[in-house]
Image 1: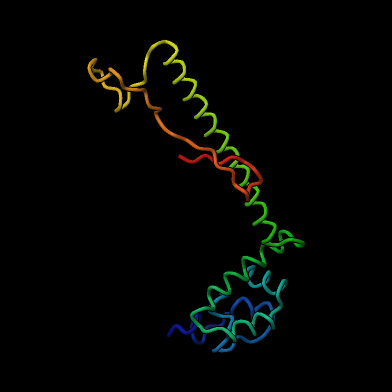
Image 2 (image 1 turned 135 degrees about the vertical axis):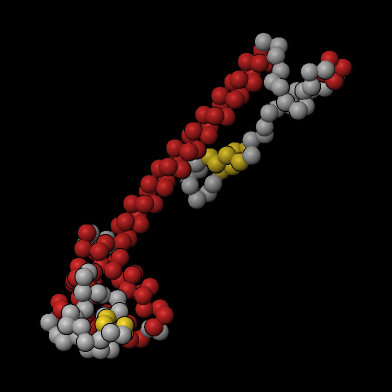
Length: 171
């Protein structure tokens, strides 16, 4: 049997859309390539949120090479809307954005703590008469005469306007 649009010709099994809509699945069914019979939940949610007629119109208006991506987007949005009827995928995006903000704050705090510990360690070395080993400080006594100890690294604090005054560290 020859493959045609995701269904075998002459196959008795209609696509998930035609099965849910209780209609005969035509040879040129626009739904068949994207809503196979073995995944009925995909079309059920899309139909519940968008309606079969609207999905049919959207798919007909798109070039064939873009229809798969459109169906994936509709399935994602429909599933999100079923989970969260008020916010849909916007709620999921908002939640992820809050997680990103929290993690960025935690990262900034950890970086600040690292800087603080390094400054404390450098001060401890200086207080006890030890200089941290770096390429500018050689163990040769002749090279230490008249040279100043340079910091291990330079770090500036930059205020990010978008984050409302939270410090961002830049090296």
